[in-house]
Length: 253
Image (cartoon, rainbow, N blue to C red; front, side):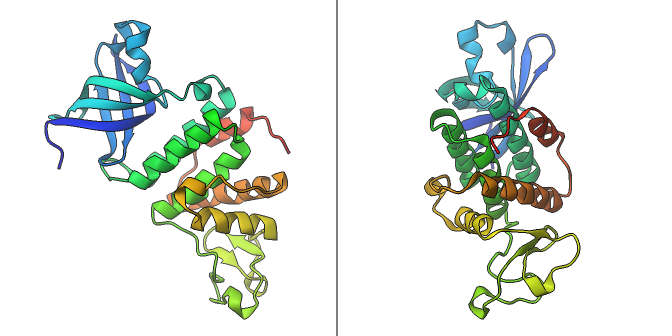
């Protein structure tokens, strides 16, 4: 249970202006989950004082938590991930990833692994120049694992056949998961061996290694289509931020 005074690291995954000078922040924190916080008067401060209230800035926050909404008493920036805010495609992608993260875990549910996933993904996009085409499906699939909605890709979701029984998992049903050839029905999505291998790696690799693999561009394109449908199905909603990302993104395929 949170005390009235809380010091925590937090990543701003949403922000909105409020009243004349305030800003409402949605913080993703490792130990306390998602927290809503008000940064009062921040829009009247000098730019150097407002930097820590910018979207996707990671800071150490001093919060007062006596009410329904926390109040930011102070903050110290750890990483602003500036290259993200300077690239509309990356910014729009992470806005979508923030939306599915919020939908997956809600508020005040400690999720240190999901916080690490978000930070690692920001770092990969900002400083390692990993493409949005790769980051999107990796994040979507790994998030589903971390929030307890992991697809079973080791057995056919309908007949239960496993890889050891010689079944080729050639299809993916977004309501089920991996489907063998003999169990497929209309609407199931064909999945290539390359895309299947990528999905296996994303689900079972070490957290720090989730972007340390290579695959053909067509595999990421295929995987991205599958993963966004799976996320939408499991979270039982669609995301307008995904529509916007797809509208403005510059595809490399």
